[in-house]
Image (tube, rainbow, N blue to C red; front, side):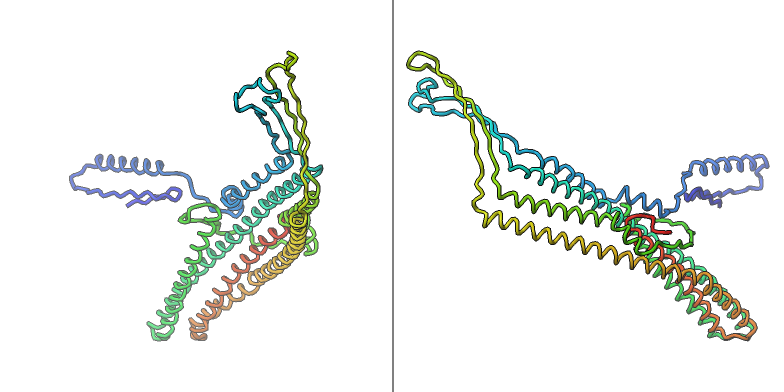
Length: 453
């Protein structure tokens, strides 16, 4: 059997050749040559595209391009961007065609002097300043929606980064489990070897086998968690839940120093989209309040009409056509139940938006503080595990295993030392992942990538 793998695609070719004693050497050579040609054709006909690991940068680019929630809110922002021009335009004029004073006894257009066919046009004119306020308020809401798109983009990037780093941790944890499974098998071999020659105890073998079974249980648990996180990431990237996501096995393990917290808070006040969106909503509320106060003033209507008459006057002259002009205005006389209540409503809305803006500032500042604290704690913990704790634990395991082989160390202590090392290695990757996730939260809280010195 010959098994060939080309870029993740397995091509299996099975040769079953019955060699007969009467087969000539030339025939055998020709048969082998033909089979070799078939193998080469199958190999090179297989797809040559290898599936590349999903880097965190590629995941970020993909979520910005493919996430349906971001596409939906972007479409909403585009819709709101079309409102200001509409709100700042005058109402459509009215064109009227009237038939006035037509006698019903004869329905004659020339019998009565007042009978006329009238064509008119009218235009409603809001009180000066109302259109501008409506347009400015709509523009502020459109700007808020645009900042909302940027805020959602930051949130999605943060979520993708956090899920990606959690997946990376689970991959490394599974790798540590597999390595410890191999080591535990070696412990079992050592324990069985000593037991077979009468220098060891059967309980040592059973203990090692029990710990190996626990590692298999841990592997199942981690694989289940990875499956769930993979589904979460696939959903964010608008992929199928059944897609298998492969991540790089190694990443940079350095931890750059973040900027001072006060500087980050000040920078967030300038660039964080959610704060800009809240400020625009406050501006819109202030403009709507000013518009409500303008409703105490009347709106006007201007119109003109031209009436065409038929027939002659008693003196024999033709009847002249008639022109009409119209001026009208609204009468805001129900101010107690309309304008006063509208001003109260808009005042409360403005106060609400003012408090919401202050609360948003507090939330952003708190998010920066928490993310910064988590990043520093995770990075310091990871460095401590990598440079001190794990090397010391490895030396302890090696020393105890050597001592056990010469009956100077109890087997239980060897197993405990190896389990401790396994826990430390897992905690290291967890600390690294937690620090990277905290960095993602910090970037999202500030509103830009430049959060390091």
